[in-house]
Image 1 (tube, helix red, strand yellow):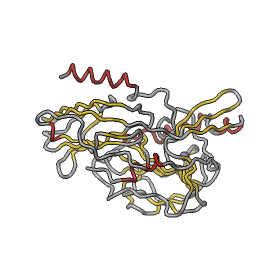
Image 2 (cartoon, protein in one colour):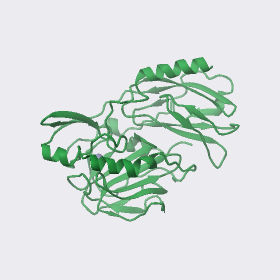
Image 3 (cartoon, protein in one colour):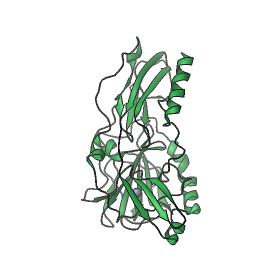
Image 4 (tube, protein in one colour):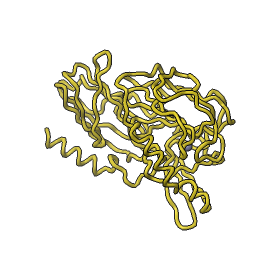
Length: 332
Ligand SMILES: [Zn+2]
């Protein structure tokens, strides 16, 4: 079985999804990469692809070996930016596994004794079939997860050198973000803190000025670089109340040069929501917040050129599409 696992792992690594060294993202994903120069004036419209669910209810595409039924997946098909939930019933103890992208994951025991793990799928993940083998706690599982094709919007932005120097190339701002935020990405409360489905953090009408996964090419005088936008930019009037998308624990609340007044909430099992550029913050690190409690107000702090909320979601350090998270409560 070890040989099979090794072969599967090699296949997955060859597919190029597990590690994406070329992927440049907002600092939420890769703070070492200089990025983030958002303009709320950017106009990119919502597409139907952005709003439909990333999780389908298809049945397993393979027949499972005896005993495998005790480990199950929320879905065998997923879109880039989506996630799957792995659950194990009747396991004999804590265990981990290597996910279909070669990332080591731990199963966490819930109050009811079921083990659970959320597995995110990067926006940059190539479509295809990814084998998944899980062995542990006296259980074994083999299945294939299909990552469906997904086309993201694209945008080209031209900058003058002043803006580049002040924003996307600011090493100091990126270093501050990394130093204060990076370790928090891996904090995971081992219980479900969220209640029901996740909700939009704004109750008023807004303009989606940048979508999740948007590929941006920045042109400046001595070159260009590419960047993937890893959240929703919701342009709306300054001072508009911002509400917690769901209940959870505040891991960070404070000002950062890059992302302005920033709030990070852990909702359990590594599932997080992020709120950037606010004018005010009404919570503190360590607070337990209720779903839909006001946590701040829309602003244009940090590197931002107009009032908007950058709303993002992640499973630990991997960003997922907020619209997929909002579309259905994570299935445990
Ligand atoms: Zn943004």
